[in-house]
Image (cartoon, rainbow over all chains, first blue to last red; front, side):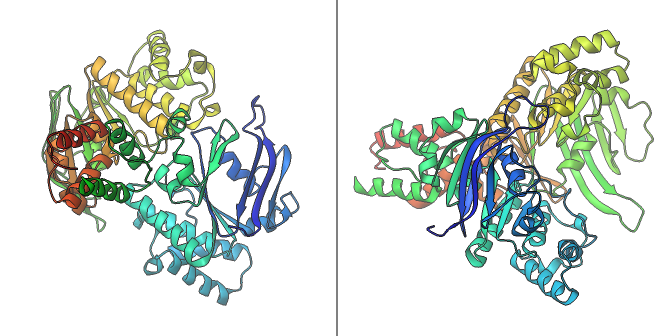
Length: 280
Length: 289
């Protein structure tokens, strides 16, 4: 993660019209190319405002946002939106085409991509999200997870550098959620896409390279998932949760089990207990 | 008020080329005062069942008993209003249904529609706004100036204002943050106990089903696959996983651990505390762990 930041947010403050308190105050975050950054926080912590600032749906009152070394402003917003694609929360509110392929083509058409190339890009994008078999399906035949994967295809067809998932899994059932997270992981690993996922799902956040915890419009903490989940009680006080294996290890430790380290997956903790079992 | 579904079938768009069988041969019994959780993956028929509970849908075969009313397939039913008042449904994302100028008017809309006086409706609104965890000042605000979580609470207050005897909850915590989820579920559970309601919870959260339900009904491909108390349901995790369903984290963990150690820990644990106690007991019995 030594590469230069693809996004840097410098001392950004913002408040909504008519509101007294700041939705964001003095927020600075940078995102490296190819990184998966999770931004977590309770409802109203400022994380969605941050997403809107990142692709120019709102502009900061003070501070600046740089995307690919360009300052985000009214003049650059259209160029920058080509670099930063966004997937929103509701699978139903962002489907614009009559079929899956029309939907993915929509953004390309708007951007004046020639027809020949459009066909190639639509196919490729749908292959990346494993939805190629659904080209002519209508949206109401798809599950929530499938719709969100089509939304992701619509974004990556535009070949952005960064994809922002704004609570993109929060309305899905557990299978749909897993499907979308797996897709994002593949895109990141295979295509080198930079991912910012805004979420309060801790399982999703645990997948990221780095986590930023937001609270009341400020950056409360940042670090790797291992580091962040060490905060345990603090996270719960902030209205968040901690992954199950950490809770389980804590309860066992209180009973006198020797588990010096935390694990982010069940299987690691199971193996640890298994070793304890053998070392007796 | 007891609710019973007997041999219920429902076909969408019956007698058209688009006819689709959503549920069939469904038998569910919900004695008054019980907390039932309906689980099953998307498309299993949960939402179709739910809409039968207050006769929003009428069966294409079979019968639904709602208190002393019987909804029969093929018969026109008149005057369903009392049913709608007694069985309150909190739909998914209920905040999308808010519409009035103020929170107070929004909450009063339902009861006034059912003939409750304005004064009484306002009294209920004042009482309920506290019950759902919002300050009284909110009553005079526009619902659209509130946060998503607050809007959801207002919408729930609107359903409670009809003073239902049965509360049907369709994924009431979807999209909320972890704290909001716990607060809302604890609130429903408190109301369930205090007011002696029947509660039917449709959820993807196995944690909530395990924690609150007296009985769990598993729906699969339009049918009831199994009905039992949570411990019985989760004592066979493989069965659920095969149906593409989750189990509570703690159940999954116990299952993995037992497979790794190639022996049983004991009974199926539904909380972290139960499992850590069971493992401690094993250790104290001298069974190495």
